[in-house]
Amino acid sequence: MGNERSLAGGAVPPLWSAGFAGMLVLTLLGFANLAAFYGLGPWLRGRGLGPAQAGLAIAAFTLVALLLIPPLSARITPATAGRCILAGFGVTLLALPLYPLAEGFPQLLALRCLHGLGFVLTLVGIVAGFVAMVPAAQAGRAYALFGVADLLPFALLPPLMEATLPAFGGDAGRQYAALALLQAPALLLALWIARRPLAHAPPQAARGGRASRPVLLLLAVNSLAFLAHALLFNLLKPRALELEGSALIGLFFGVQTATIMALRLLAGSAFDRLDQRRLAAIGLGAVGLALGLLALPLPAWALLAVALLTGLGFGAALPLLNALMHRHSPPERRGANLNLMMLTLQLGYLLGPLLGGLVVGVAGYAGAFLLAGLCLAPGAAALLRLPK
Figure 1 (cartoon, rainbow, N blue to C red):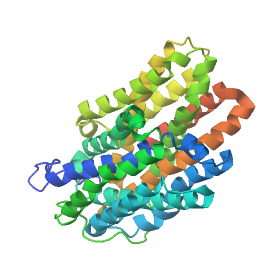
Figure 2 (spheres, one colour):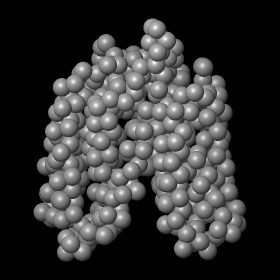
Figure 3 (tube, rainbow, N blue to C red):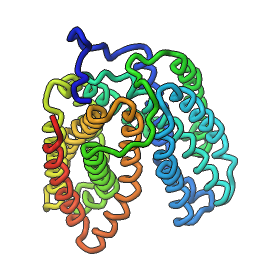
């Protein structure tokens, strides 16, 4: 798998095409279904749900992904990816207008499950189609661009939603319904992509087979990375309050996001020229160091240095882990394995807050960050044991 670095004549096949650009747009539109719902908890409470009910309704979206991604990823191939994306956006377009209409816990829970189904179908189809468009020799750059497309909605939508909320009478549910207008063009784009041949498509579907050691190792390391990512996202604010840096919380995430996107846009081609194992290990090491620093009694201004360090670390490590999975997977298993990498994201954001909360109860926020940083160390070391 790792030797698919060029065509027979030595020329590297092109990465950019109309289909590749279209898939990045679909990725952006698909992940808008996560980014736009940053304020879902307070809205659900305003609809009369209790804290536990609101938490379960939010978690239902993730639980649907955990249940459905494994079986779907084993069945969806590049040939069926377009239809899967179409089905996903179709279900999403059905779910979004129902948000202002749903009343009570049973209806809202069912709606979240329906919306989760739409997102899972969209995500699995996008990943299965995307991997078939990626030449092995440019996997690092390709997954860096994918990482920009899936992160951009989180940078754009929250401020846009806040700015337009008054135009919707202060009702976030009406905003959620209006998102259908943003999603509708994706149906036409998915239909167009579904009819295009995929130049790098594998010859057959992914069916069964035992995962190799590199694949299992990469899934484990990716799970650790997203556990750390989720813990940072959920526990940074209370730790910043302890360090008297409350005024810098928003700027922290702004610096981190800007650093991630700038690195992936500017250094994506280097991800293919340099040793991906070492770069990913260095990235995880940078994140581990940053989390360890958050365990120290830092001055408030140092939070911005930590934000820069986590941005560089996550900006490099996450797309490179995907590129390594692409490289170490048989062509017919790439779509399934990369979808399992997406599953670790959902798993990290489900378990990260739970495990972090348990550690905070014993060792405080500083202890939680120290433990998270230490847990990344064996993951970084394990990457260096991957075959070249």
